[in-house]
Image (cartoon, rainbow, N blue to C red; front, side):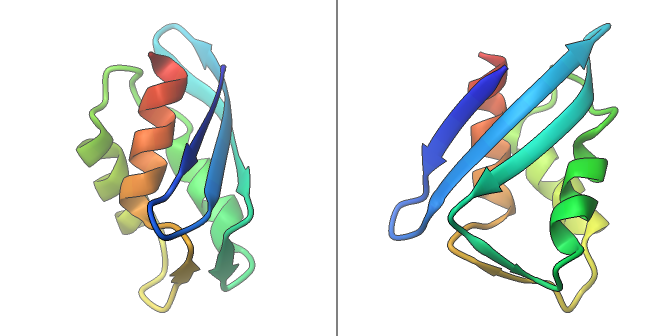
Length: 91
């Protein structure tokens, strides 16, 4: 599954998903955004694994926020954008 989302005033967010038994088995987030620290991208991808395909965009955003260190900086995207693009991929 694949989806793209252009954040208003921000960057392009792309997600590719593998789903099994109504759960996200693997997630690969990419795009022209920037994250600090560098390992934040891996943490996001790991956080998305195991989520139900029925999770709302808000639930996804909250889950991503909890998975990231407090000093994470996101440039051109935010957890809500990740929730939106993931829901688009699952639609």
